[in-house]
Amino acid sequence: MLYFNCDYMEGAHPKILERLAETNLDHTLGYGEDPYCLSAKEKIRLACGCPEAEIFFLIGGTQTNATVIKGLLRPYEGVIAAETGHINVHEAGAVEATGHKVLALPHRDGKLDAGEVRSWLEAFYRDGSCTHMVQPGMVYISHPTEFGTLYTKSELEGLKSVCADYGLKLFLDGARLGYGLAAKGTDVTLEVLARCCDVFYIGGTKVGALFGEAVVFPKKGTAPGFFTLVKQQGALLAKGRLLGIQFDTLFTDGLYFKISAHAIEMAERLKGILDRAGCSFWLDSPTNQQFVVLGKEQQKALEGKVSYEPWEELGDGKLAVRFATSWATRREDLDRLEEILETI
Image (tube, rainbow, N blue to C red; front, side, top):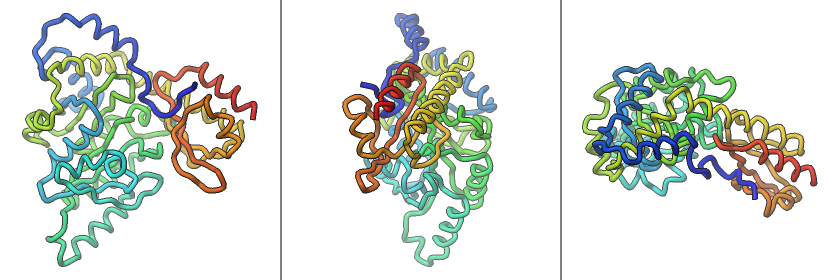
């Protein structure tokens, strides 16, 4: 069976496993105060061009989203997100469980539009009874989005401007950030994110690590008491060095960017294979997530041989599905997929 369901089906990059094994019997302080975490933070600050950035390591994406949002919002505030946003659809109400409502807005291929966010805010504050409503305190976006689409530098700057005008925080979910940064034609870099966002995170779970996300606050003092909140949320790993070692490895010699680029290379090859097999694309994605439409015959031919993520039923037996590559996708797996599709 070939698996293209998602980008976190494998374990970790071999270099990470090697370093975990090499340092297994080291004695270090806990809770992120070890030299590996300190080294990783310095490397991330350098990559982001933010020498004063505050960085925290958490274990997983849902936990990170809920903790960051809780840490930056007042009790009566909510977070604006695209209706397709991960926090609105696929996190089992984790944000709402912290007491903060997700204020879902329409999307454009998974993205929020700055003009539409501004119009929504204008309408919200024109309402004479707005003080009886959940107050917007943050805008949440992800890069790449759930649809594998990317924001441009200009679009991020537009959202930053809206947030500045209304006193909102801009939070970028970077669970798949490596694949967005490596996509062809993008003008978004870590430095751009650091200038535009109040907080973002660099995903490790889906980009080469066993687990872990690195939360970056570009400006010092953005979230007072965040370390304590991380502990309160059960997100503070006692053996913090396990996170530090992984991110220190990922940000040594550009490994994070190299393995992300490999996933994009494999995605481009995958796109060509699917195109030659006569598959139509549900939407155009420059990232490691590729969305195609499969007819009944194609679904039958792949059954029991290739696993993918069903996305949306389109009628007449057609199904929009997602194929995802990752840092670990092998060329021989793509060759095998092409052979299977050629039999249809």
